[in-house]
Image 1 (cartoon, rainbow, N blue to C red):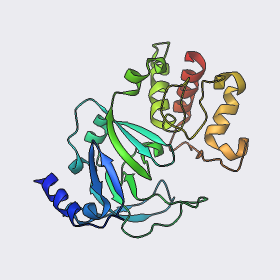
Image 2 (image 1 turned 90 degrees about the horizontal axis):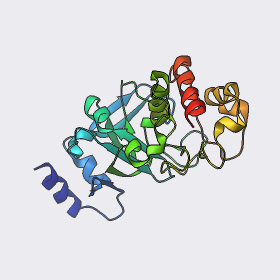
Image 3 (image 1 turned 90 degrees about the vertical axis):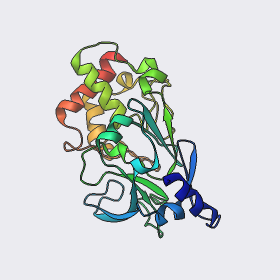
Image 4 (image 1 turned 180 degrees about the vertical axis):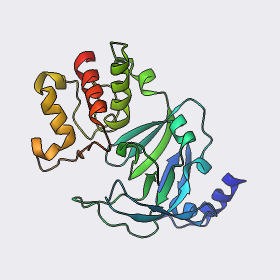
Amino acid sequence: MKTAFFALLLMALPASAAEIAILGKTFDSAALLASPQAKTVHVDDDVAYHRPADYRALPLKVLMTLPPNGTLAFRATDGFVAQLPTRLIAKGEPWLAVEDKPWPALPGKSSNAGPFYLIWPGQKVSPEQWPYAIASISLVQSPLERWPQLAAKRGDAKALAGQQLFLANCFACHRLGSAGESEVGPDLGRPMAVSHYLTKSGFKALVRNPKAVRTWPLQQMPAFDEKTLTDKELDALVHYLWENH
């Protein structure tokens, strides 16, 4: 019933409407906006725009059937690839925001977050799990299944915690030793491991405030404050990168 409704709407829409591929099916922005599931959703602290915002959006779960143990790859038009466990989607309430009128440009950029943006109103997830400018959503193997070299070489709790923090906060932008899909930030493992050219304190400073460490015209990395990544979590991330790779 749900798929048939969207299919009927798609037939009547102009070709200029934006499209998104979700698990092999193509959805049109105008059809999504016309859906009875679409609502105005308020976000108190928008990750992309750093301010309160209202969006026309649909619950992501109404657009797909989630397998219990899988990974969804959200591929953006700028090369960003967020890989979210389906258990995170199932446990939370993410919404797919759809650009209904021209959204403003992102801070410091000429482009905006449209036409599709994953938002988590009132929920605590990594900022890297708010992908915007989404072109497609597909079901893939977990990162550790696709790239076994990501696994912490030491099995201690701190290394495993750092591994999960890397996957949640860094992997959408950075590959590690060629593992990954993103084309946004530098590979942290090749041609030289980050632990070989940065000190631990220098890396931590870079994570906390990238522009205070180095700047260049196309710099995109956001700052990760203690609210987003605690000092204990940052220590675990460093342990994973320094002791395991």
